[in-house]
Amino acid sequence: MVHKIKILNLIKKIKYLILISNIFFFTNFVKAETDLSLQKYLDKNDIENGETQIYLLNRCSAVYAYASGIILKTDAVSSKKFIEISNNLLFKSVELMVIEKEQKLEDAQKKAEEIRENLFNNYTTDGKKNWKENKSYFKGSYIASDMTICSKLTQEK
Image (cartoon, rainbow, N blue to C red):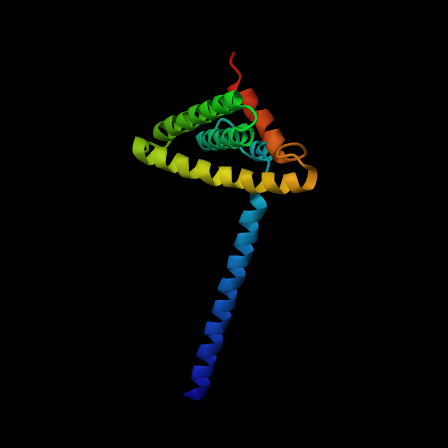
């Protein structure tokens, strides 16, 4: 009986260690994904796919919101323009979620706002790191590349 209890305790400890290891692994995996450039994402995914388009719109919405916040104090007019672009992109994402995923409008809006907030937080975190390294929130980082891609998406034809 005592031997059986020791084995059960050992099994519990092993399960606990596996759980902790998985948490650390996935935390590091998710952390590493924050600096995945939009170009790399698009290279790996089919742009004709609705999911890819929704992600692209959300990502561009987030990078424009981020840029708006960065330039707010120095250029309020451009900051306002960027936030308008951000909101338009978010709206298009919501529309596509309703059409492609057949989600209810309210659910799609809530989901899109949550996604943009998470992506915005990634840009903020990575922009601060970039500032420490080279005194720029954009230059020399994937954020500048993302802005270039998104600016092409938002150009009027």
